[in-house]
Length: 114
Length: 113
Image (cartoon, rainbow over all chains, first blue to last red; front, side, top):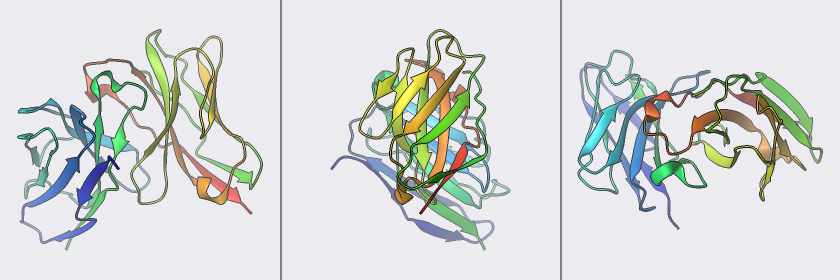
């Protein structure tokens, strides 16, 4: 079945460390997105990519970096510059123009700084 | 993209219809209404979307008022597994600037036995 796979499901990081969250999709979608969700809040866009080798900052890109070397993959690196990285991170993808089904989301990665 | 207003929480008895309202009074003519739901600690799931006409699929029905300033998501026979946060979002189709997709706090629906 097609879908989006995020790994790991849970991730613990020491302060000052960079960590990379994986996001892989086999839906042949062009666009991919990273969102952050904090308790009791809506999703906030970190980065998005509409084609390979191109990506744009979202509303809260500071302290994060991404790459899009392959259509299927859009990893997110949470750097030590991110002051409050503990959150639930969601990856999504969509076909061109969003067609009929909008975004497809992964199951998320919960990052905790210890 | 237009912002939306939803009640923070609602209750529904199992087996009854759940009607979730959404106000989007500043919606533009080319903006679609999308509904997603998020079960605790999972990624949001697409439910349905529409522009002007009412829509129905295997999960739900979407009723959009004639002036398009509000809509209602209907789950015809709610089950315990429908307990989730439901998000109403309006966005332009084929919009190039995805930065303006705004996710609110949604409606937390509790389906009770």
